[in-house]
Image 1 (cartoon, rainbow, N blue to C red):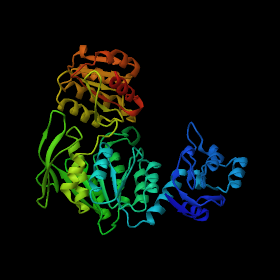
Image 2 (cartoon, helix red, strand yellow):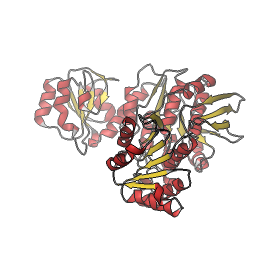
Image 3 (spheres, helix red, strand yellow):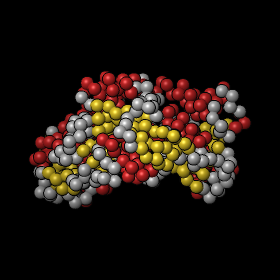
Image 4 (cartoon, rainbow, N blue to C red):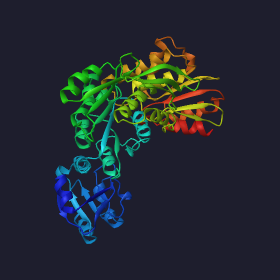
Length: 479
């Protein structure tokens, strides 16, 4: 929700004021003209398939109070917007990402009473964000990133949509390139932050894991004290880049670090971790001040444990009731397409983790498949991973080799050359040829496997979003 004037909108964003309208700018900030409503600001991105600038007049006619353009406006549409009393600005450098970031930074400046928690990392960002939101909500009014709104567009939209009476904002920050998190942190100004891990997601764009660590560590650049809380970064003690981030980035920026894990010296640690037949971990979360509390998490897999510990570290820093927060996290609902266990009409269960994938998250998902109780066959349905660059063949091979070492009854590979790379690596590691099924696309895999998935089977479905394996999940679940 924003409240501003045409002149102020131009001033805080550096945009050119093309016409000052008479409508009050007081409403949502949207990037889809179909969502424009009375008082809203429509930000028109020039997309690859749809040019938002062409919807200037349509947004004004829907009731938008202002439109921010990223190109020279069509004269007739500009006249129509002016006629309707709609303010029109043109983003500086036609850069609507920067326009949104500046607008979000101004909203954040006007709310020094907000305490912002930033969440980044290669794997587990969304799970950790959801755990944070559930835990913090037990004692504070919390607003969190919705879905995957974690990039240079989604992050500022989160800040801009936060209610005025929020006390804590939990903001997920993803990235594809260096300096993206720098820009987001500068706008959001987090006080507390979490880096879940440093994996191989986007290694094709960043070149190395060290570069990924640098990019994740950018979150400290915008951190500052707020609401009486000093800046603190929570990290896992077992991470191989933890010391690098703490020593090179956090401490020079005046940001303290808090380590979580299973070591005796960790400030927040997991003790007596066990896994049930449903794959859900039970543990005692213990704190350096002596408090301990036992929970069973709703998220399956051992990988959920460090995510939970990171969330509890932030809860502790906020001074909330830790037992109450831990119980709230333990009972939070599953996240769609992220290790979500679904029943099927056939009596099988599907572990839907089809939202996205990297080599490390593939390995973690395969662990979950093998940790859960199963009366039938364990089936891994794996698609290809994106954004791995020159490392893609080698990293797909690693996944195939890892799968071969697990007690999996059937390995199903969907895709082209990279899927074949996983299969070849699995065979090289001794996985039986007659237990590998390969398909070029989801439709053929579903046609062949749908009828044979039976009661008691446990089926993991995992790939990058671009592979479209969510369609496989829908097909199997509905049979």
